Image (cartoon, rainbow, N blue to C red; front, side):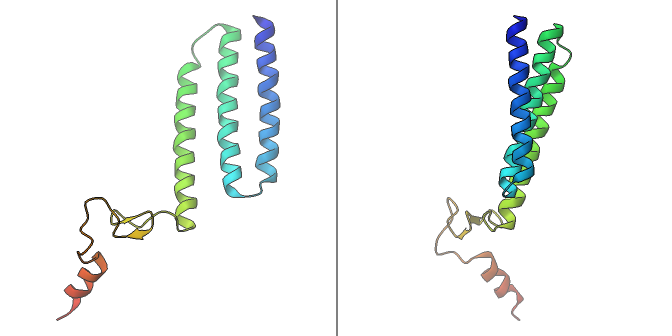
Length: 122
């Protein structure tokens, strides 16, 4: 059992080193975000291996919180990058960046901009 844990630890160390190389080299922000997410998963795996070696369960809540924070951070960065590149719509009426294709929306109904423009007129 110890040999398996040592081999797992070595594989996690190699994965962490390769992930750090990807974070440094890039080439883009999306690659760095994915590499950071993988690095956090490697750290979580390392904590689990450490818990198995020392035969305790104190680190399981730490791993769960770390995983949730990694997920939330990845989603936040993905939304930021998507909004910066104009992929994400501006609201519920603007699904996938296309005006008027929201489910249940009447295609002949005026858009929110048209309604605001009509309300501004005397």
